[in-house]
Image 1 (cartoon, helix red, strand yellow):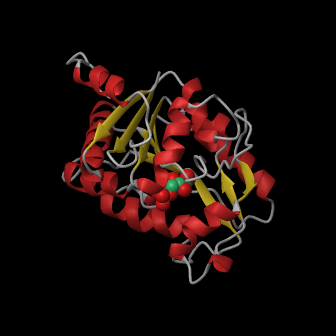
Image 2 (cartoon, helix red, strand yellow):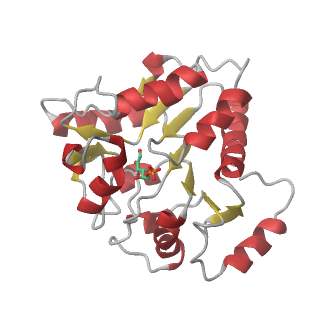
Length: 259
Ligand code: F6R
């Protein structure tokens, strides 16, 4: 079972995930991080910015989950730009060691294969941060995605485009397609840390954690992973039937176990 931790606020989740990433980097100065975009990981990046001040991160490598297809990489909302401004610069990472899928490639199938190959060549992702879409996606693996899928182009659902319209002038400006790590790619990371905050995520969180394993809710793929930590705030946990049990397990967790 994934470890499920319910915390009062997103900032508390940011501290827990930030501590896990800082510990990883202390153990492995050339750690490979899997980084996500969107609003959810921001408290983690905020926390890490303080935690990593003065730490040598020159060998840390990072791979983003996904990138829009059809917007310029210099567009303010491209994930190249977002990762650069929210992760690479504030955390002091070497830009040459931070990769984002190439959503502008002429040959997107080739770019997808190359991306999976680059992750493998790095030795694989040590810790993958994940948000969850209100439709249950992780990365941009929309409902119906194969649990075995590799990095490839996906069509964003109307729900996802609506959810992301807040970053664009209108919903029509949200790209229709994205190049995303597949569920099979994500499952190869050694540790998954899925975060979710707010009411809009409560139903997806309950379906992902307590519903049947189904491609209709891509985040249920986390149950196929041996080491997954889910950190949610009170509001996102509101629909969980077994909340008391998760709290009991977390309260009684052996001291020596990290997340
Ligand atoms: C982002 C990503 C998506 C988001 C998800 C939640 O790289 O792959 O799965 O994590 O759409 O987005 P936010 O955090 O903005 O609610």
